[in-house]
Structures are given as structure tokens and as C-alpha cells.
Amino acid sequence: MSGFLETSSRIWLTGATSGIGEALARQLIKDGHSLVVTGRRQSALDELASLAPDRVSGARADTTSTAELGQIDPVLTAGAPLDLAILNAGTCEYLDVSQFDSELIGRNIETNVMGTVRSVERVLPHLRRTRAQGRPAALVIVGSSAWWFPFGRAEGYGSSKAALAYFAQSLRADLAREGIEVFLVSPGFVKTPLTDRNDFPMPFLIEADEAASRIIQGLKKGHHTIEFPRRFTWTLRLLGNLPQGLIDRMAARMARNTPQEN
Ligand SMILES: NC(=O)c1ccc[n+]([C@@H]2O[C@H](COP(=O)([O-])OP(=O)(O)OC[C@H]3O[C@@H](n4cnc5c(N)ncnc54)[C@H](OP(=O)(O)O)[C@@H]3O)[C@@H](O)[C@H]2O)c1
Image (cartoon, rainbow, N blue to C red; front, side, top):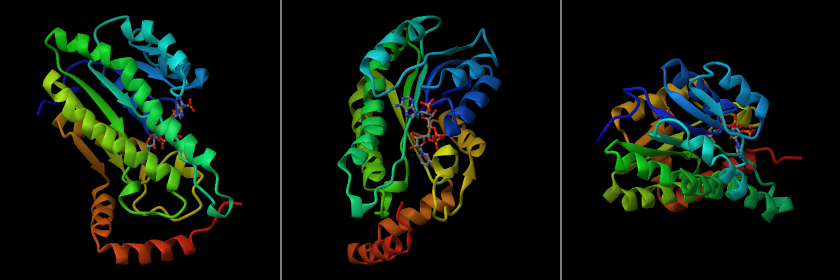
């Protein structure tokens, strides 16, 4: 397994404007890498670009729009070949089952699955060009550990991240022959604007800076599966491997104790 980020690299990072993505952007900029940063909020992109104007370019795009992603292609093309694409943009909306809403589930899937899939479509030709020059190239897909256990209200978010994990692993198999590596990141709870909205206890919550460091360490070590914090992901793996009847009873009890949204 090869390691990344040991030398100065050129990286496309989506979801760079807040939370885990912003923490990652700041650490990668500090470490001397060159970045193309993407999100929908131009002011946040400008702020990141101002940290190192010669190495950081803002490329505003909504990842649910093929047209907007197409418009940033010149920015991805400019400069050195891309070594890494870190596809981190994501959203989380919880379902109130008493007001079942397919649109809400669709929004989770549109952003988390199709937004990532569209980004892969945009960046693959760039990574192929990098490989053609004999350089390592990789896709990093930010999933979640949330889908390892059937949490109530997470029908949309959990199913989107389950789909994304399968997508990443299947893509890893297909791209292996081209030498394009695929990393899957599965965080537990991280304190960000996304989780600040949560109204339930979040065990083993970590700061976004720690999450960013864990991702960078994993990439440097060439770990294609990056899961953290261990005390959370190990507990969840253990729970997820219990007999199904037991999982169902625990999940139903937890769902009863979780407040529904108003
Ligand atoms: N926080 C956690 O506990 C946790 C746990 C597991 C996995 N994750 C995953 O980690 C990733 C980052 O989450 P976070 O907690 O850092 O959330 P966050 O602070 O809400 O950040 C989400 C990022 O995604 C961008 N984004 C969202 N929708 C987008 C769209 N349609 N087009 C382009 N950019 C979009 C946002 O940028 P704009 O607002 O500028 O568009 C923002 O930069 C997500 O994939 C999330 O599912 C988070």
C-alpha cells in the first residue's frame, strides 16, 4: 500500500467550507499542499484561498449539479496534475416517521451518493492523467459509520452512507487495475455544524481538527479503510454483529427514547 501526502501534493477537496472539510483544508494548507476547494458558499472559499493565494483556489459548485461541476473543470486542470480527490461534501437530514417524507430521504441520497458520484465522474479523467505520468493517484470518499447499526430517524442518512460505502468498495475493485486507489473514511460523531443540530447524546464526540488529523494519518499510512474514533467504531461494529433479533429490539428501544423532530 502506498502512502499519500508525504510530499507536496495537489488535492481537490469538496465540502471544504465547514466542519471536517474546513479542518482538513486548513491542515493540508499548513502542510504546504496545493488545494482546489469546493463548496457552495463563496465567502468561505475566499477565506480559505486567502490563507495561501498561490496554492489554494476556490471552485464554487453545488455537487448535486452536473453543470456546476462541469464549470470548475478549468480550475481542476490548471496547475500540476491532481494527486488526490477528497470527496467530503455531505448532508444529514433525519426523518420523523409520523410525517414520512420521501423528498427528505431523496435529499440525503442526492447529496451524499449522487453528489459524490458526480464528483468522481468529474475527477476521474484528471486522476487518469496523473497515473499516465507514472504518479500515484487516489480518491478519498468520506462515508460514515452511522449505517453499521439501524438507528431510528436515520433512514435517509444511513441508507445514503451504506450506498456510498458499497460504491467506494466496488469502485476500488474496478480501479485497481489502473492503479487509482480508493480510500473510504468512516467517522463516528465529530463536532461540526452538521452535528450541532443533533438533539440526542453523541458518544465519543471528537473535534473536527482531530478528525482531519486522523484522515491525514490514514492517508499517509496508506490505510484504505479509515475509521475513527476507534472506541466508537469498535463498539458499533460489535453491536452491528449481534444476532438480528437482538439488534432489532435494541434499535426499537433506542428509537423510542430518541426525540422526534417537531
Ligand atoms: N460530523 C460528523 O459527526 C460526521 C460523521 C460521519 C460522517 N460525516 C461526514 O463528513 C462529511 C462532512 O460533514 P461535516 O460534519 O463536516 O458537515 P458540515 O460542517 O455540515 O459540512 C458539510 C460540507 O459539505 C458541503 N456541502 C453540502 N452539500 C453540498 C452540495 N450540495 N454541494 C457542495 N457542497 C456541499 C458544505 O458546503 P456549503 O455549505 O458551502 O455548500 C460543507 O462544506 C459529510 O459527508 C458527513 O456525512 C460527518
